Length: 344
Image (cartoon, rainbow, N blue to C red; front, side):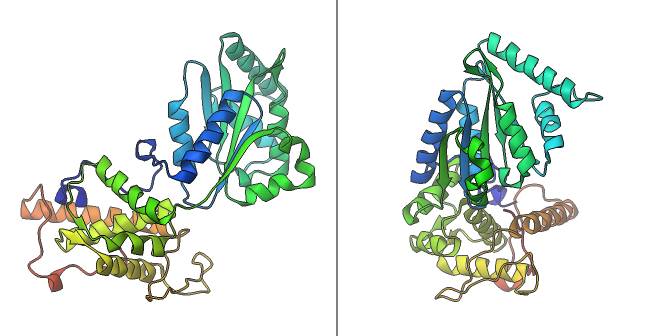
């Protein structure tokens, strides 16, 4: 939608992790170095934790894209609501191994043969477990047991554990001692700083050919940091919504007023019912704009954006327009939507 209006080559603030937009803040750069060091050790577990939306998955994908695929065969588990009995099944499937009608003993044999073949070819296996805090204790122990596969003195499987802060607490438990002793690198990824928030926004805009349209007021970036806390996914959600709003108003410059209005609309779209367990209580800051909630934001924005996109396509077909968005005659004629596109 707004990409056409502002002559951008794509969506700069999409919520799906894309290593092509990876931004190396101080924290991300340090975490990246720790993880890369861990990968080159070729054994044990590497742990990356961070708050929701901190950019963990994007960074891991950027790291995987930077690895030598001729020597490292990587697979990823994205559904981690797994018990011990499910873990081996899921890992085998992630590496593309046949699993139908195989017993656990047969899958273990098959997996060991697979790892041995890779090692003999001068390769090794890397398993990325996303949302690892959701693994049961039994699944964690099963994962530790898989790390025991060795050929001589060489470990044949290395694992990334990527998760939310509670993963750190899980690993501190007394019954996790053996797994914890095999962690060779770990890092907790926090939000970006104020100056990094500005650099992050400009980085993503420049990746899609932004030519200062819309122009951005200098005070915008400080305000953006205040309302998002420097969390990348929240920044993406707010900026994506702001560009859509600016496009609908045919604006070619945005500043603090447009940002504050956008945040209020997002807050109102989420609602303020504190009895709704999906919506955390939102605290107002000194300017009366509440920080944007992260958990429920993405799915709702995406659903609304898709609906609006379909409606726009229909309007363009009716009017015979197939390029730029129609400009409203006046600001008070702009469509007023109670809920605007949500993404996280």
